[in-house]
Amino acid sequence: MAENQNKLTIGFNFENEFGDKFSATTTAQVFNDLGETDIDFIGDQLNIFLKQCGYARKHDHIFMEDVTEEEWVALADYLEELRRSKEEGGDEG
Image (cartoon, rainbow, N blue to C red; front, side):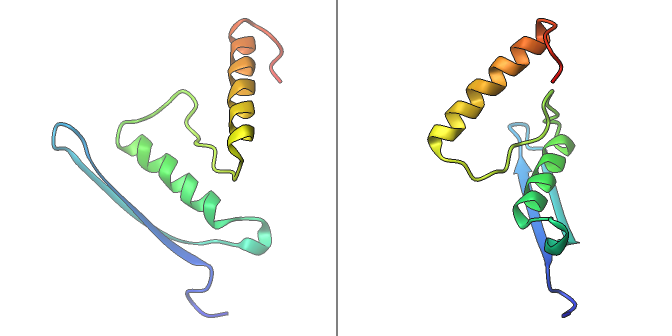
C-alpha cells in the first residue's frame, strides 16, 4: 500500500466578528475496509473545529449522511418530536 493511500488532510479557517482567528489542519488515515468513510472523517473534524472555536452545542454532532430534501424534512421533524418527548420525560429511546 502506498504511504499516502487512504490518508486525508482537511483544514478549516474561521474569523469571527471580533477579528479572532481560528485555524486547524488534520491529516489522518481513513480505513475504508473497517467501515470508516471520508465523509465521516470530514464531519468529525468539522464538529471538533466548531467546539474549538467556541461553538459547542447541546447536540454537538452534525449529521453527515446523504439524504433527499424530503428525507431531511422528515428527519428534522422526527428529531424535534424525539427531543420534545425526552424533555417531557418520555421514553429515552
